[in-house]
Amino acid sequence: MTELEIAASSEVLSSQWIGFGSKVKEFEAELSKVRRLPNMTMVDSGSNALFMAVKLLDLPVGSEIILPSFTWVSCAQAVLLAGCVPIFCDVDYDSMNVRAQDIEPLITSKTGAVMVVHYAGLPVDLVPILAFGIPVIEDAAHAIASDVNGKACGTLGDIGIYSFDSVKNLAVGEGGGLVAKNVEIVERARRLRYCGIGKSGFESAATNSNGRWWEYDISEPFIKMLPTNIAAAIGLVQLDRLTALQCRREEIWNFYNSVFESADLISTPVNAPPGYTHSYFTYCIRVPKRDDLAKYLLANDVYSTLRYHPLHMNSLYQQTSKRLPNTQKLNEVALSIPLHPRMSNHEMETVAELVLAFYG
Ligand SMILES: Cc1ncc(COP(=O)(O)O)c(C=O)c1O
Image (cartoon, rainbow, N blue to C red; front, side, top):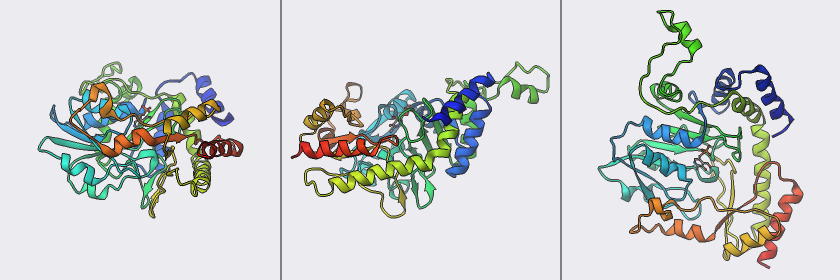
C-alpha cells in the first residue's frame, strides 16, 4: 500500500458512501477492460466467489467435482457447502498444477464439474481438460495477471474466480471477483451477491412502476457477498500499479532462479512456457530437509510457508483409500520463500544467501 491507496480510501471515507456503490462499478469496469474480462463481478472474497461459482452451475445435489488436493481449503469448502462432493486429484510434481491425466481416471457418471487452480499464477494447460466436455471452474486467485496466448486466466473455462485479499497480486484487503462466459450467469451473479435481490433502493426507484422504491423481488435464496467502495477504490489504484507490481515480482523471481540455478539440492519452480504469462504469486522451491530449512529461516527472521496443506489429509476431507503421490511428496519438500513487490534487493539477497548457506 502506498500513499495513493491511502488517499483513494480516504476519499471514499470522506464521501460518506463507504459500502457497495459507484467505486465497485468503476473497479469492475476498469479491471474488465484492462484484463479483457467479460464483465467481472466483484464480491467480498475469493472464497465466496468460489462458492457462488459452484452454485451457479446448478448441479444436482451429490454431484462430484474433481479438484486438486493441493489447494486452499475454500475450493473444497465451496464444493461441500453447495451440496456437492469433492473428488481430489493429484498434481504434476514440477508445475504443481493439475493435468488432464490426473483428472481423467476420476471422471464418473456423477461428475458435474472440474475445478482447476492456476498454482502460483502458472496457467494450467486447459485445452485437454476442456476436451472432456465437463464444466470447468478456474480458480485464478493467484493468476490475476496470467494469460494463455493473450487470453486471461479465469476466462478460459466456464466460470473463473479471482482473489483480491491482502496478500494477493492485486490487494484490496478482502475482495474477490467472478467472471463467466455466459452473460446470463454474470447477471445472475450480480443479483445473487445481494441476497438474491439484485437491486438497491435507488435502482428500484428508477424501475419500480408502482412508485414504491422500497419494494424488491427476491429471485432465489442467497447470502450477502457485497464488496465495499473502500476495497474497490484501493483496487483501482492497485490496478494502475499492477504492471509495475508484476515487474518487481518477476525481477525477484528471476533473481532467485539465477541464484539457485547451480544449487543441485534446490528445485526451482517452473517458468511459464512460450505463450503463457505467469503471475509470480509465490516462489515455491522443493528441497530436502524442508522443515529444517523453514526453521533456520525463521530463526534468521525470514518467514516461509507451504501453500497448501493437502486437503485430502485434513480430517474433514480424509479419503484414506486415496493416495496422491505427488501431492504427498510436495507436502514434505515444498516451501514458499518470500516474494512480494515491496521486498528490497537487500531482503531478496538475504533470503537467497540464507537458503544457500543452509545447504552449505
Ligand atoms: C487458490 C486459492 N483459491 C481461493 C482463495 C480464496 O480467496 P480469498 O482469500 O479472497 O477468500 C485463495 C486465497 O488464498 C487461494 O489461494
